[in-house]
Image (cartoon, rainbow, N blue to C red; front, side):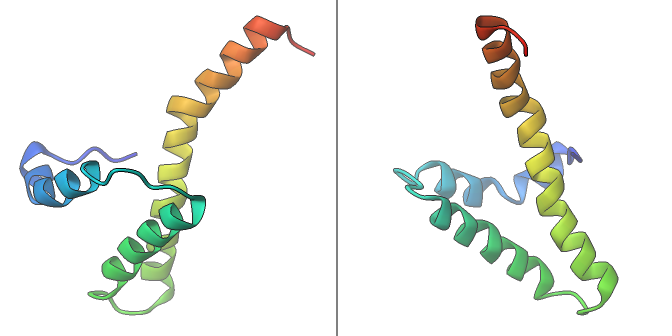
Length: 86
């Protein structure tokens, strides 16, 4: 997952504060709506060609991979230790 510079992060400070202040994202559908809206925003300033569409889709996939690496894998490893391996 690319880590952007603190200067680049500053551009998104207000947006991220707004997102953090949402009381709850209460469904998978709401989460998908937010992600899809960001993907549309990204594409709104780019040429609709294979490379840009591919970059947009794979950025979402890479975020999912990073989330899995940080959270889901850890959870699975804990469950395996608690319950034994197969």
